[in-house]
Each structure stands twice: as C-alpha cells, then as structure tokens.
Image (cartoon, rainbow over all chains, first blue to last red; front, side, top):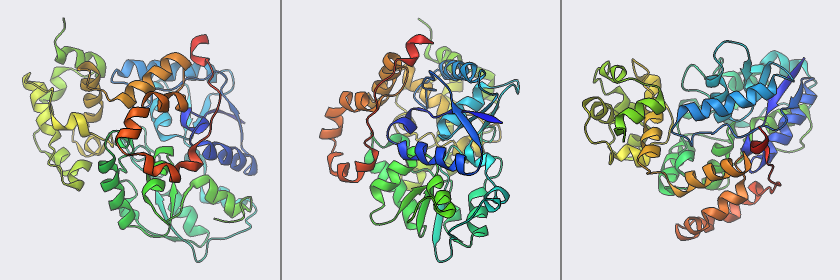
Length: 226
Length: 153
C-alpha cells in the first residue's frame, strides 16, 4: 500500500532533516510513500479566514487522490489543517506517529537499545489538541521508548506550549515559556514539530534536541550517535 | 461596510448564538498558557465582548495568543478562541510583519519560501535582536529553489 506524502513548507526548508529522516525511516520499516506533486502551502496558522485554510488543504487532497486516499503529513499544523478540511471520511489522514507502534518497531531489526538514556518526548500543542484532530494514542512515543529500555521524563510538560507561534514577534514570551519546559524535564528532547525544534534548540544550551525519526533511526542502526 | 462582528462570524463560521452558550466559568482563563508566565489574561472577556457587541480591538489576547488551543480543550462548549483571535487580527489589520510576509510568499510561490520571508522581515530580525541566535540556527539554513506550484493549481 502506498501513502500519499504531504511534506509541507517547513520540511522542505528549515526542517529538511525531518523530511530526510522520515523518508529513510519509512523505507526501513517497509512502508512506501510518494510525495504529492505540485502541493501548495496549507495556510498553517496564518489565515484568520478558515474558508481559505480549508480551500488550500482541499486542493492538496485533490492532488493526493491520484496517488492514494491515505495521506501522511509530518508537520502537526499540516495534519490539523488536512484533517479539518476532510469531512466525509473519503480520505484518511495520518501523522507518522499514528502508524508507528511498539509492535512495528520491535518487529524490525534492532541494533541499539536505549538503556542508560533519558528522554523527554515533547509533543507540543497541536498533536494533543483540539481533540478532533489530535493523535489517537497520546502516549505512543513513551511506550516505544520504554519498550526499548529507555527512561522517560517530563510527562507533565509534554503538551505545554513553547511559544513557537509568537517567537518572531515577542521573543521574551517564547523564552519564558520554553524555560518552563526546559526546567521541568531531563535528558534528550524528542520533538515532533519543526517549530518546537527551532525554539527548544535556540534556548536549550547543551541539551540535545532531536526529531523522533532520528531517535528511531538510531534504534534501527542507521544513525551512529544520538 | 460590514460590522466587525459580522465579519468575524463569516470568517470563523460561528454564529452569535454560539457565544451565548458561554457559561462564564472562566476555565479558559485558568488554563491559558499566558498565565503561566505572569500575564493576567481572561479569554472569556473577549467572548463576552463579542456577544455583547462591545469593543474588542485592543484586547491583550490579540497581541499575545500563542494558538495552543488549551482553552478550546477545556471549554465545556469547545469554543475555538485562537481562531477567533486570528480572525480579529486579520479583520482589524493587526497582523505582524512576519505573518504578512508568509502570506505574501504563499501568494507568490504557493508555498512559504523561507529566504523570501527572512528578506521581508530582515529589519525586524536585526532591530529586535535575533542576530545573537544565528549561531544556533546553522542547522536550519537549507536553501531550496522556489517552485511556482500555486500558480498552476
């Protein structure tokens, strides 16, 4: 089965690493995906007019229908907009986390386990809320890390806001919000959203911030060091 | 000209009745992200003013809302306050230069093309002191050529 892949603007620019590692991870796990040709921006959180956002995503879904009715997008904003524009159940829209689970990871060949590593899976806002467009299993990353022998920290801050949306407008607000997250957590950050990665990386100092795809590729042996 | 309230309803798909169900429980105020960092923000005030037809132009939330949807999740009626805030901003022309540059990029290229956005907001980046973070942003600089995908579709 082929999934239609909607990368979104960020994954072609600043979050290129997420795009590359996601493609690698999917081929390692035996899932095939094909990029939607000529896709356009989904509008992210920039438009006040919801009709405009829904129109943008509908255009993209129309283009996706030539490949598959199963669409994946890795950016939480894109996932939200695609899920909102789709009403009749004609398309199914997934975040890669919806497809991953402990069983799938353990069925692959595991080269490195995560003993002696501490992780803070940080989901951010839009994978957890609003509930119509949120992830189905909100603890999937914790389960995977624990199954591989790692330690999980900071579960109470995993859905707090990092202020990413306001960063280029009011950097002190983003600094104060991410300080709360950084103070109440330990170990390596595992993030899912391109913007969370940018904000946490900016303020994190020596703490490591990685995408979830990089963590899983490390487990599968494609990345040597975390 | 249409009244601001009517245009908000048009943009967000809400009707005035939808706000009359607000119970005034202020749970949105208790969970708001901004209250974590010392602001005293009450989203329910905004809803009340919308319902009463009062002035909403200068509410503090309009400048500060981070669109985290925490209010929506805890609201008994799931009123989407971040979407209201975005609509108000667009209607009253309170959008920041960054948002405007992104929209412009979408209009021209069909996508957010980051070098273009950065060029447009370069004065803000320099004047507001973002230069000191440049060292940490090395990983993010990935120039890709713009596509004109939006024009075709």
